[in-house]
Amino acid sequence: MTISDTLAKLDIQLPPAPTPVGSYVAATTSGNTVYTSGMLPIVDGALCCAGKIPGDVSVECGQTAARLAVLNGLAAIEAEIGSLDNIEKIIRINVFVNSSAGFFDQAAIANGASNTLVEIFGDAGKHTRCAVGMAELPLNTPVELDIIAEIK
Amino acid sequence: MTISDTLAKLDIQLPPAPTPVGSYVAATTSGNTVYTSGMLPIVDGALCCAGKIPGDVSVECGQTAARLAVLNGLAAIEAEIGSLDNIEKIIRINVFVNSSAGFFDQAAIANGASNTLVEIFGDAGKHTRCAVGMAELPLNTPVELDIIAEIK
Amino acid sequence: MTISDTLAKLDIQLPPAPTPVGSYVAATTSGNTVYTSGMLPIVDGALCCAGKIPGDVSVECGQTAARLAVLNGLAAIEAEIGSLDNIEKIIRINVFVNSSAGFFDQAAIANGASNTLVEIFGDAGKHTRCAVGMAELPLNTPVELDIIAEIK
Image 1 (cartoon, chains in turn purple, green, cyan):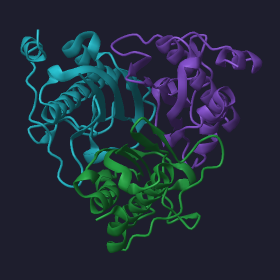
Image 2 (cartoon, chains in turn purple, green, blue):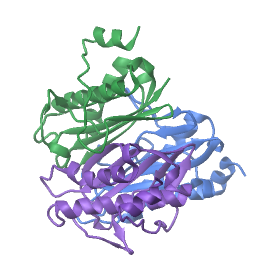
Image 3 (cartoon, chains in turn purple, blue, orange):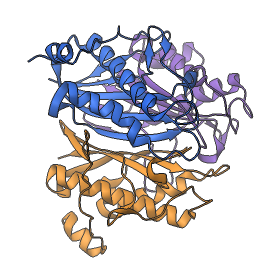
């Protein structure tokens, strides 16, 4: 089963690849490693929600935001390497969580991204990760994350 | 002298490798690079201490926490690649310090990890690092850090 | 045109390579990838400015700080690999912005680094990046950033 098949089965439609304005790119390849920029949970050009978790954005919405951000990252990788079937495995995600004071469950938010990767790639989606709590994030996004993956 | 010999000489006993529950892993290998997840200063299943440095946790305890976290990372790498003697060198650590307002000595905390790596690996333990101050961290850990290393 | 020519044309003089004191290094190479440590906007041994953006340090000064930090990173890479002409491309920068509460334009600060890389390296300077807002940073620096680059 191809990743396209899996996405269809999961009823996941990848968003259009993000196109950064300026001096940086959404994804780049070095050897057989592909890196994405920090991805935000942007849907149709706007953040799905904004603010700190859980003060402004619930844990559940934060998990959805992490899932949306990881799908944007996969769209960037697809645009960079041609097909998600060329991914050998996911190496790393760094999950930056916009955290209200006293919020210690960054792992729960990161699971929104991690679980999505395993749904799509199976064992090849099992990755290392850092999940940390940020003071502020661009555009007041609740989550920013980047992906590093190995290419076949 | 093997790394096992060095650990014995330093009276360091590596903890059991951490076993993340869920969709991610403690360490993964890509080519001759091994990456760990963000490691916490967990000893016998519990954080060694919790809170912000220096408000809740002293600088000295923070340094110990960084040392414990790096040992957990090395345990994860050993489980992934079989033996720490297979490490060619340590490439990078990212040290996330749970920082009280006005605390600017994240480097002192990171030294708890950096010095441990050089004690164990000698010149091969000299690495690049980022040390930064976080708003919050998972479980209210005082320190989280990840390791990237080159394999022989 | 060599990178040295470009630097001269842009009237950029690289600072001396930073020399960390202790158990870590300013840059290290693994295969054809070079990593720097987190770089600060240090000029002649002192931070160009200190504090949070924009409360203590203006956005414009923060952009200059990001430019200075990236030049320190390039100096570290030059010392590590011999010549910036050996850079194939810039892979990644992580930009940690010391952010006042309610500051959401970490991207503007990161542009100070990103634009400098493209001025110097052209298309080979186009990189992926993460730009995030920190609670605190070492020495109260307004910006810390690291570079990952591919070597020819």
